Image 1 (cartoon, chains in turn cyan, orange):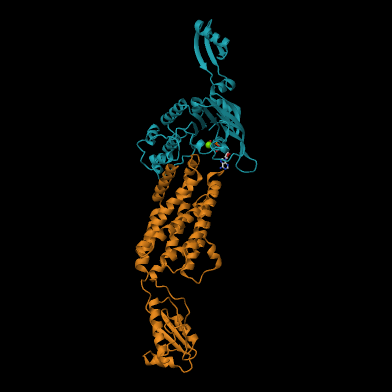
Image 2 (tube, rainbow over the protein chains, first blue to last red):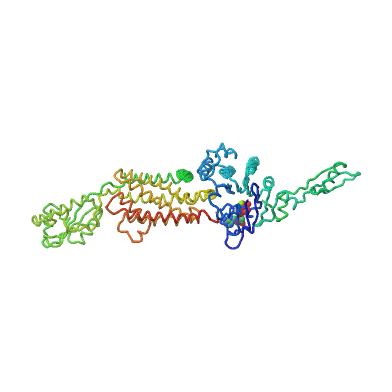
Amino acid sequence: MIEVSHLFHDYTGKGQYAVSDVSFTISKGEIFGFLGPNGAGKSTVQNIMTGLLRLQKGEVLYDGKSVKTLGPEFFNRIGVSFEHPNVYTKLTGFENLSYYARLFDVPTQDPMKLLDMVGLREDAHKRAGAYSKGMKQRLVFARALINNPSILFLDEPTAGLDPATASRIKDIIRQKQQEGCTVFLTTHNMFVADELCDRVAFLNEGRIVAMDSPRNLKLRYGERSIKVEYREGGKVKSQLLFLEKDSDRALLHDIIDHYDVQTIHSQEATLEHIFISLTGRELV
Amino acid sequence: MMRRFFGLFKQDLTLALRNTLMPVLIFLILVMAVMVRFVLPKEWKPVETYYFVDRTEDGLYEWLLRQSGIGAHQFLSDEGALRSAVGEKGNSIGVLFAGPTTHPEITIMHSERVSAQGLNILKATLNAIVERATEGTQINEGMEQPSNVKFLRPQARPVAPNLTSVPGLLAFEVLVLGFTFVAVFIFQERSEGTIRAYRVSPGGTGAYILSKTLVFIVLGTLYGCGLVLSTMGLSVNYGVLVPLTALGVGLYTLIGISVASFFKDLSEWFLPGVLLLMLNMMPVVSLLFPTFSPRWLTYIPSYPVTFALSEVLFPSGKPLLPLVGVLGGETVAAYVICVFLTERNLMKEGRS
Ligand SMILES: Nc1ncnc2c1ncn2[C@@H]1O[C@H](COP(=O)(O)OP(=O)(O)OP(=O)(O)O)[C@@H](O)[C@H]1O
Ligand SMILES: [Mg+2]
């Protein structure tokens, strides 16, 4: 279990907080999404959680132990993929993975297998400097998996990837979850968050403005409803039904069974709509 | 633990060998070797002219020398004229006789380094002349040289002139490799961001530093020994040279990492870095021009490196152990400082 409580971070030293009073918990095996526009503070939170940034104020606990006291045994357990692909450009993709693997004290994956998984087998022996941005990104993602981590930190893992490749990455993330991995995922892509995450937190200007499962968020903030148009006695009638209400569901069945239904419009809200309605700004 | 260290070492070695600076360094070492072997003179220039001044009471020595066929233009009137004549003419020697005829005080002055062989011949010759003048009375009574012959310059070491540059070049190589190359290396990792990936792995600061240090020790020692081998051959005590070069490169790699940790990139580092490099080159200057040896020079870490290397290549009987002791102490201190600074500036920075 990961507990983050009252996290603040000030890069400037002048009391301008990039992250303010951020608290959340992630349970084991959960995919937790961090959603927010550019500059919201997502990467800052991830970097504090991985120990890259000094913890200034607040606390980050892993199974009760503070991130400040964590040593090699922690780093053996986590996998981190970065927002900006950071690989040795003078080394090949394969070398990048195999050298990184040797840093760990725990059993590691076969680099070739991982490269294959992210679609880089063909380019395994090319220098990473010659990779495209998307290829480097996949290499960084593969590197995060090398030590069979039980906690994965993924900063924008699908940004800039074509849809087919992105869906491949998403499949791998789901598969990791099935293997028991806890995932902290940062993105400003609604659909990725909606598809993958068990819970998401909306981050805006360094603060969490809403946090729940995508479904509950939609339930709470979005008007998830169905608008049915049907013919009754020569007239077209319209009815708005909330599917979470038992009475409305019964009514819907009744309408379908007894009337001539013309159209059914799902009014389901997207996370994006909710974010806009909560913050007044768009995600991208 | 060992697996991690050697993995890291292999990676750093691969990166160093693939670095664009590598061909530059190989070229540099070749230039040095070619210069020493083929460009610099291998022999001291033979003495072309001797000048004499006889200030003894009866001018007996001048008369004797004239008798032995020395031209009139080689005799000067006083010490000042002698000095300026020797000073003007590159490879000349001036001899001044003064004092009583029976116990003349002989001063030899020379402007360039003259081979020891040449000086020995001169001494023997002067000895013979004095002997003749005093009718067989031996002044130096069995001693190898007349006790009253003074040299205005220390006796030149019997080293071929092209080889005198080797310790300086070697020290230069140690500095450039350790100090500069490691900085280039660190900035490469910083700009690629790979250091952040390292920071979320279990590899710690110690392994990070030591693996780089070992890479540069290996490269620097190979380079250094290559340079010495190609110029001085097997006449050198490699059993001492190898560990000493390794220690020097190690020390300068640690200093190089420490200094580089304060800067964001190579361009920020450049001016202060080059200035520091030049400061550390000062002991090499002192080695080439021994008259330049202010006291503060001895506090620069490259001082013991430079002079220990010189002592190994051209043993003069000075004790090596104190220099090596200072060097070892400095290396340990540099490691401790390096760990602290790397931890503070590279491993835990707020920005990136
Ligand atoms: N190294 C830094 N120094 C100073 N300010 C920084 C630094 N890194 C981030 N910030 C500031 O902190 C705020 C949060 O940045 P952060 O990178 O965490 O945002 P983000 O949500 O990850 O954005 P993006 O979607 O663009 O990745 C921004 O206002 C940014 O300008
Ligand atoms: Mg970010």
